[in-house]
Each structure stands twice: as structure tokens, then as C-alpha cells.
Image (cartoon, rainbow, N blue to C red; front, side, top):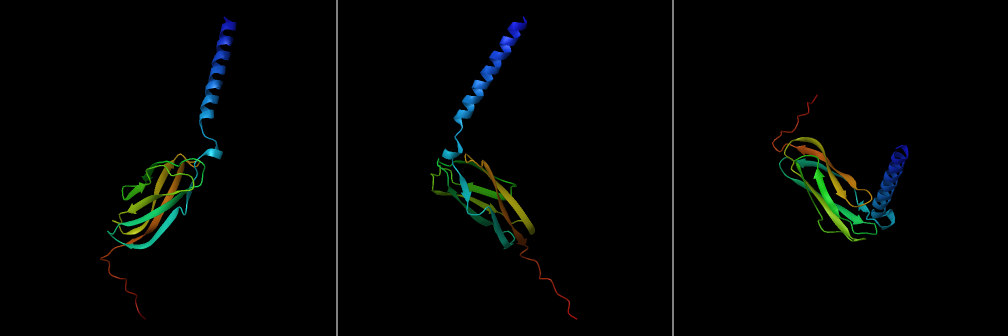
Length: 145
């Protein structure tokens, strides 16, 4: 009985090792993988008026050796709407991730859009920041001496 258990454990271990090697062989190596490169990963809108949506387009270049496929771009909240290149981006070609912030609430903001792709950097976080000024706000009065 002891020999049977040992033989079974050896067979199971060998099977798991072979399966793991097969899975690893299916993944592309970094030499032939897509690479996602952004011109910049943070955009500062500065001061923007309330209730006027602000849009910025992040430019992507596929600096890898395989087609780049963006599978998703998810905003950190419902106040930001992302759009992106849906078709594969060939090596050396450009694509985009566009983010629109609705600017409904006055104040300083920092929002993110997480881009998921088949690149070696599978997830990249892009940042939008700025300050929304209330359009109806009266300017502050500075006291005089």
C-alpha cells in the first residue's frame, strides 16, 4: 500500500510539472510581446470651469514586437468617461486612451483611468488632475489697509 501511495504521488507531481511547463510555453516572451508606451501618464487640466466637461487624449505607441490590444480602460469613478483604440495596434503604430471629466463639482480633483492590455505592463494607471472653479462664484475681496 505504501508503494502505491508513493507511486501515485510521483505520478501526480510529474503531471503537474508537465502541465505548468505547457502553460508557461504558451505565454509570449518579452522579446516578442507588445509594449505599451505613453507620451505622458499624467495630465493637469489646470483650472477649468464648472459644468464644462474637460477631455484629454493620452497617446500610446506600441514599442513592442507583437500587436497591442487594449482590453479595457476603467475610470476610478462615474465622473470620468474613458474611450480607447478598440482595434489591435501594430508594432510601431499609435493608438489612444481618451478621458473626459464631467467637472460637475467645484474643487481640486485627481482621477485615474486604469488601462488593461496584453503588453508586458498589463495594467497602467493614467492620472487626470486639476481644479474646477464655480462659474457663479464671486471673486474674493482682498482687504485694504
